[in-house]
Image 1 (cartoon, rainbow over the protein chains, first blue to last red):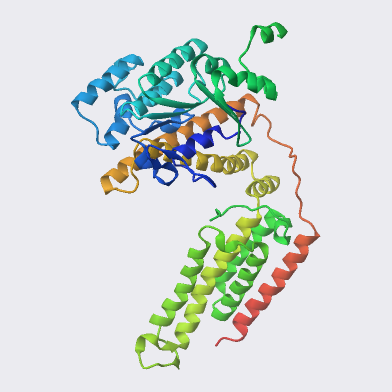
Image 2: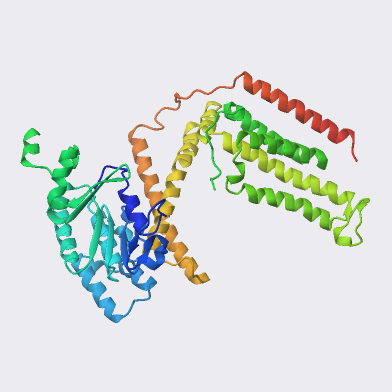
Length: 212
Length: 258
């Protein structure tokens, strides 16, 4: 979490190898990630960008979902079954042949998600998944992502929504102006944030609602 | 590497009225083709380069400049190597390496012309805010609908650049390999890169049209402007200086043909 321009996206992008750290190094998957090319990280790390339109490349929903698999040469009959299964889950199975640009914002977002998890990366980096989703849907997808992590995946997510963070996440890293302010389990993170004076990033409580 | 675009600054060239600079850019570009004397062209190009370095000392770090400079210099060498007309000036015994007056004068002419146009264009682009130029053109009768088209396009160019970068990164993140390509895959990947970029641009244009219409853009045939740049005494002085210099160059060009 963190204010606009604090460096959340930059942090995620640096982990994916788009920026070279000016100091320090990134260690993961038994190698130094800061020296690994993005292309070689793809099998281990999935990345969802902020804007769905920047990451839709193909002419059909099915091709879009399968693009990473094809690029990694992992496409086969067995995987196709898995593709179909996931498309059913996100409700796009009847639209496999449609042009992905015709989908609604929420549908595109879900397609973005499926498109980066089909090859089972161990780490998922998500930049603002919840923008444009209503609260019900947001809860549904946070629950889904939480279940997904229980299967041995790790998710690092840039997020503005304190309530959802509190309800579904394990660990909060709060960044301001490029510096880590707190890095704590979610159980203590928000009281620390409150003590530091970041009131607007606290989950809305009954008390706050009473003021309004 | 910095990109070739307007770099804010306070030099004399920055303070000139955009239209003055634009007019001189057009005039000099025309005169360059009238002058045939290589030495005059090259001398003017050197003055242009010195001015450019004065205005922007880090000119060598601007994208494309080194390439243009090397191309211009290579032009001179090519003429030395392959134009063997005129009087022999230097003869090492090998025909290719001999230097003749024809080669030198042709080389100076074409290389000087090329470099001069490059240098003055760089001076113009680096010191002129394109929106200021558009506003100035609108004050001189360019219908503001077209003027704003130019301004908007210029404003959106950096946004498009950022977007292109993001799309490229998103491709990498999906396992696209730009480093191992054959022609067919290259075309596919290019298509996959251009599709979102184009769709994004069209969507943005669409939204922009609606929001401008919504605020009454074009409703009145006349428009007032917040920025009000005008030509100053500086423009007059500089213009006289350029005029005198060019008159001298043109006179020399016709007066003493070698």
